[in-house]
Length: 163
Image (tube, rainbow, N blue to C red):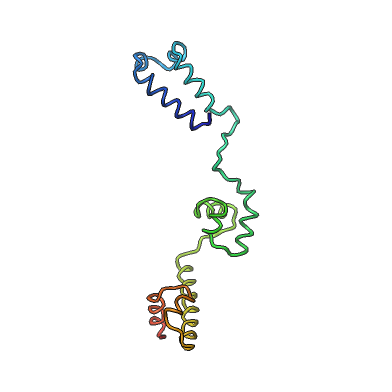
């Protein structure tokens, strides 16, 4: 039995036997251990769950970040987005960012920096849109090519005094 199955079995035993036991409410657990077969079984199962001194319980979901780091660094060098890297290493984006931050490999971007980056991207998109429009493409075709919505493109062109 794995740890989850043992816990479920313990709960089942307690529900079936201990809930109706007349000695349970007034006696200490030692009484159950010495005088009750179910108490002995619960103790034995509990010992299986409790790690020995110095023993660390193995967690299958726990990642060995030192082993994953070369793969992560290689993906970062290819400038893959964080969410893609997180999917590859099977973790959440914020967990990945925390681990990278612990190792000094990632610094969060400030809101101002994010806004500046978005502004630069839209400047470039608007320049491309104007060039494509001069070539005779429709706004719908331009938006498909640039990967943005017509409404967003229109608003950013208007904001910059372009059409």
